[in-house]
Image (cartoon, rainbow, N blue to C red; front, side, top):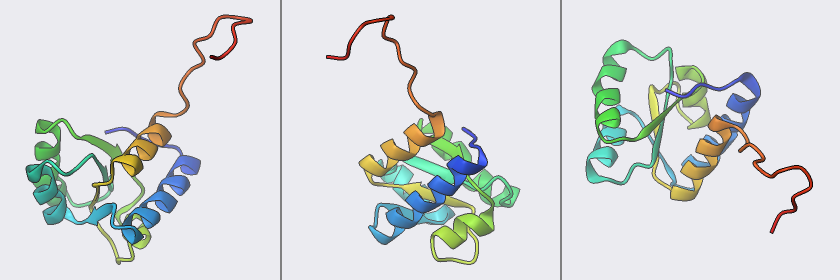
Length: 120
């Protein structure tokens, strides 16, 4: 799982909220498993404090399918972002949203230009 610092997690919570409202994110272990099986899932966010039983139901499938899993905030914070009390995992089904979260979790891309070299 890819981890984040506190500022990144705040941004992540905002993106999750947008994704849930825009139907680009799905909530809960069962829905995430179903989306992964159907090939609709682009990324998953797991609460590190979720029950091991919940995580054992979903993480092996996600890893087997090669789906990136980001370590998100607590289950309560993750649930709050999704309008729930708590949730173990949120799946991202919107490709653009997944790309944004992936970029956030990996940080800015390094500048590979040589000194004095211009863009374009």
